[in-house]
Length: 147
Image (cartoon, rainbow, N blue to C red; front, side, top):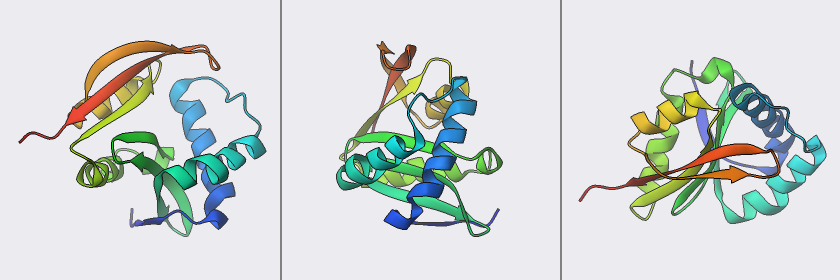
């Protein structure tokens, strides 16, 4: 799959939210309770101003994205057809290079694919918790650059 990765632009929001929603629901196994417009507003008004967001394009459509801060990966979702091709690893490697030398993130316990992926990328479990809005157990992962 030939891909292009670029910075998020507001005109990406509708398509990005659809990919985010579909990928989330398939990976986690629950329907997202938030209306699409609410999720779009969250992306544009809260996530984008406080995170660096990179969008993955293939065949003139969005197939994934990552949202990061200097010390965290807040969101990382890929469409099913973009998984297993090294794109997620490329995004995580980019996040590591931009980081302060450590990154933390959360993955839902039911998302075993994400757990295996992050562990292959060098992340380690540091805590377990509960996300009350979705009613799901989650896992906090951390990665530290080796000096």
